[in-house]
Amino acid sequence: MNDPMNATPSLAPRPQVEIALGARSYGIHIGAGLLESPASYAGLPRAAAALIVSNTTVGPLYAQRLAAALAPHYPQLHTLALPDGEAYKNWDTLNLIFSTLLERGCDRQTVLFALGGGVVGDLSGFAAACYMRGVPFVQIPTTLLAQVDSSVGGKTGINHPLGKNMIGAFYQPQRVICDLDSLRTLPARELSAGLAEVIKYGPIADMAFFDWVETHLDALLARAPQALAHAVQRSCEIKAAVVGQDERESGLRAILNFGHTFGHAIEAGLGYGRWLHGEAVGCGMVLAARLSQLQGGVDESFVQRLIALIARAGLPTVAPLLDANDNLGRYLALMRVDKKAEAGAIKFVLLDRPGSAQLCRVPDELLARALALHGARA
Ligand code: NAD
Ligand code: GLY
Image (cartoon, rainbow, N blue to C red; front, side, top):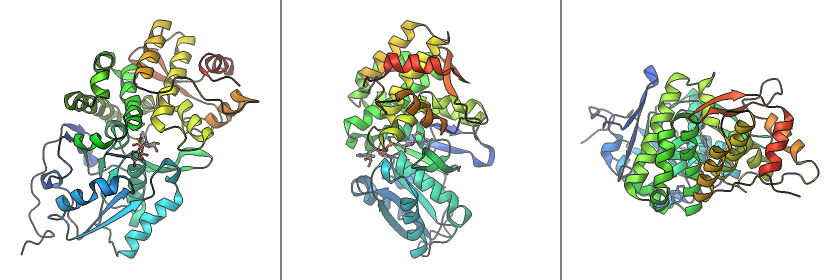
């Protein structure tokens, strides 16, 4: 009888992108049909048990197919469907994962498979980092946003009512498997949200990619397979280069948060889930580009070009009113609860030129001007 525990681990497939982190290095596999191919899982840590963590939307679509592909590798396969939504990225949901692992008698070799978008990925990764002080996990991102960003680089965690992603750990997956076919079932609004993070990589690192996104945006919106494949691969390459140099965000990695300081404030200020993460980031990039222009890093034509692309992607470009009496004050209060803040001083990722970003402090007057130009009125 075939005993997966004693089987010689078969050779891992060749990844499209490599995250180079010494002993914690891993591959990002990008292609069609990967999720249901047993070969995608060759060479991963073997164990008696694996847990597929998904949610009530993605689980019914893909968990059975994933389970069939994993069956040759793991004798006991458990599945868990978390409640769906950013509002559930919290302690209670995290605890559901721990309870399932404990109730099923899962040991410290158990492998977690995160099947879903960034919410499932961040929750599962954090659970994997904590359960028995760390078990292996694999990311199987099924949203564009998760394929181009959240599944890569090892940031895991949950929200706190007082701040977005405030509790978490750096914990790298064993592998990331981006099945482009899974994007076919993604709602259009979620596709647009993912495009925000794709657009982000151009202004901070690669204007040739920005040009490419401008040219191919209609193909991306139409989910043309070749366009999606290139967008996912180039985004992951850029992120891999950044994470490879600064895994724990002591400096450079912060550039990946372009648009996120405003974005996180919008998400927390409106209540998690009202605006999608990618929508808040899209709008946040408008404000960050404006601050960059006010500081002299980019010119007006670049700001207008970025706004036009964000709008074409189906994303909001006008910042919501968070407080009719003191909108700036509310934004400032929310942005102070940001992981980049130091001693209460807010820091923004701003462009010093198109294709290059750095972390900066900004006087409140400039924030007020940016919000006046790009914010909703009372
Ligand atoms: P999400 O995980 O909420 O997924 C979006 C929606 O799409 C959900 O309703 C989900 O059930 C559904 N869905 C997922 N895949 C589907 C599919 N293939 N077909 C149909 N429906 C599908 O949101 P997201 O945009 O993927 O991720 C956002 C989260 O990621 C935020 O919490 C954000 O903070 C986090 N994030 C983390 C990092 C990181 O580095 N860890 C980076 C960026 C964002
Ligand atoms: N999404 C930002 C980061 O991974 O650092």
